[in-house]
Amino acid sequence: MSDEEHHFDSKADAGASKTYPQQAGAIRKNGYIVIKARPCKVVEVSTSKTGKHGHAKCHFVGIDIFNGKKLEDIVPSSHNCDVPHVNRTDYQLIDISEDGFVSLLTENGNTKDDLRLPTDENLLSQIKDGFADGKDLVVTVMSAMGEEQICALKDIGPKN
Image (cartoon, rainbow, N blue to C red):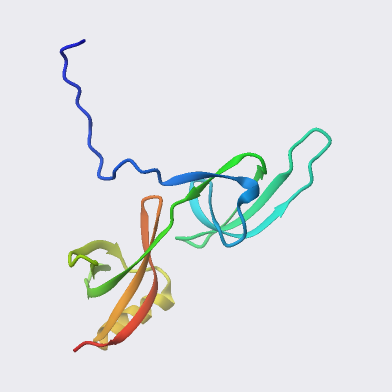
């Protein structure tokens, strides 16, 4: 055995994969798929018949869950596609800072301060107006493949 010491750079996560494989033929509409390294919600799936020598092919049309761009991909139905692990978590809104970041309260009582306000104008104005009116707001944060974004808002009544 060698006497040299091995040094490993520790990462923040536990090494869990950001995606998992799923057969292309098993992915359905309203599911999730990775197209061009972006997590997408599938809005349309069409399957072509097998050719003389070929595979049946699945044509996926997906919308990026973070920026709303439409992406397309064609994959043989017997091949595997990457499917992102998509999580939705609710946090209570504590504060909005001047530089566009929000302060959120997690389930265990800690604060989460690394999230920006959403780019969607409608949702942005709802959050700002509700916060200005002193309402108790709960935001839903969607996370996939190392990205997080506020995607929904709930009003749980006025602050006491």
